[in-house]
Image (cartoon, rainbow, N blue to C red; front, top):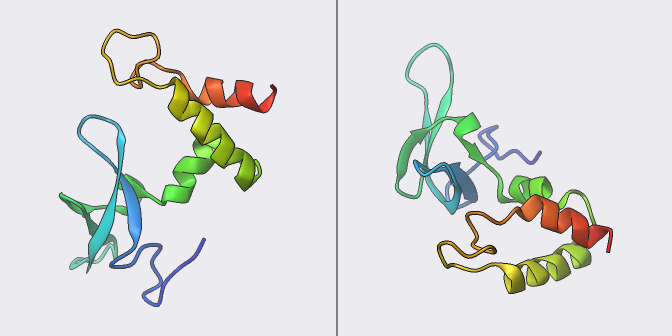
Length: 113
C-alpha cells in the first residue's frame, strides 16, 4: 500500500472511491485531508461531494478492480472490460441492465473461456 508524506493512504488530488447513499461505489477526487481534533487520531477525507469520510468509507480505485477482476494480467483485464461494456445495458428491466447484471460471475466466466 502506497502511503504519502503525511503517512496516509490518500492525498489531496488523488483518486478514491466512496460508498454513496445508493450503496454503490463512486470515483472522485480527494480534495481535503482533515486530521482528527480529538484523541483517536483518526483522519477524515473529503471526496467529491462527501465530507468527513473515514478511512474504511473509501477505497483506492485499484482495490475495486481487484475485487472484480482479481490479480489477472492487465491486458486481460482491459479485454474483459471491453467485453463487459458490450454486454451491459442501461435499460430498466433488461436482463443485462447494469444494476441486475452479475458482473463478478461474468468476469469469472470470461477467465475460464
